[in-house]
Length: 68
Image (cartoon, rainbow, N blue to C red; front, side):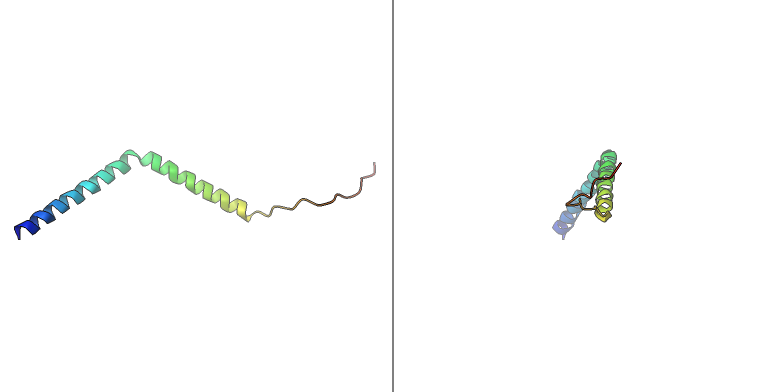
């Protein structure tokens, strides 16, 4: 029983260190993370807007000359 409790204690300690380390990493790099997310959202919105636009096709022939 003691071994099981020791293993559970070690697992809990490792988990706690992992959570604290992840939170520290996010706190230190929060500016870079938010900038990256902003760039991804901006690119996605631009692609969506361009995808919705109708691009007219170029004419194959041109009309007659305009008289002056």
